[in-house]
Image (cartoon, rainbow, N blue to C red):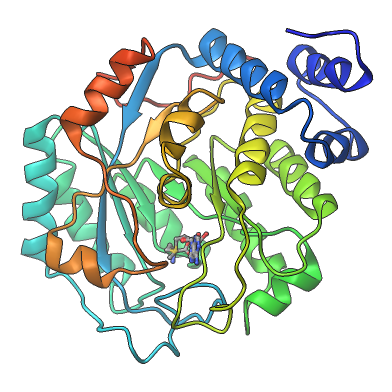
Length: 342
Ligand code: SAM
């Protein structure tokens, strides 16, 4: 690695001290000249702290009903072109069981903010899945402290709730009738209740600044998040942001790599949006700090209807095994919890 420039010194400082100032993060995001140094530093940290195993999490998208109207999201309530579905309890259990039989050690239940699935109803489904030796991750948006507590007692291990952006104004514009304050509160509640807590941000939203992305990264650190998913924004034709095209892949990869430097022992997925946006995006992410992949195991009919952005990439298992082999990585055999190292 090239270590005698101010920028390389900043990257090295991030690696060694696990802390960078906002202006240092911005300077890394601003320049393209040191991207390879950054990516290889993040890869080195990933190897040292979480090893070569890539943990697979089976993603079940069980409802695309959503009460929210996030401007970027294809399943927003006001997108009338979306055909809505809710998987039945038996459909969810059957898809989860297939994934467990295949060897997955984590089932991720994700959906829009759909209160048809009360905590009580979801809890029954969760208890049934927990009869098998698997971890469960929920990603169902904002709920009350009591709901989160109830679901934790039913056996949920992890929760994914992206902050999306920590920029107050941008948050307000992107999320009608929602508040950044409540989103943060939900994340602190999840932490308090003992969930492995995942968050993350979107990269490339209209008028998003590098400064706000730097604040996002510092927020991940402040929360001591256990998982971070960084997703490049991809425009969906059924949303108000349909014409807001941007090439956000490299910037998202950099945000992810810096996050790995500052939170070395957490789980970081190579996100589907990265693979969708850029050929071999998943592979590049795995070589730049990522250690998790979330293959979508939803049945094909429902999968098509859960269109948060168009042309979502999929994972072919045997191709994935070959890809991992080619970069000397293995498929994780355990549940892949965060092993906190400091
Ligand atoms: N309702 C849950 C929640 O709010 O966390 C989970 C479902 S939500 C659809 C999952 C994630 O999709 C969001 O956190 C958001 O970052 C991502 N997403 C939505 N629209 C997107 C888009 N157009 N491009 C990239 N990612 C998007």
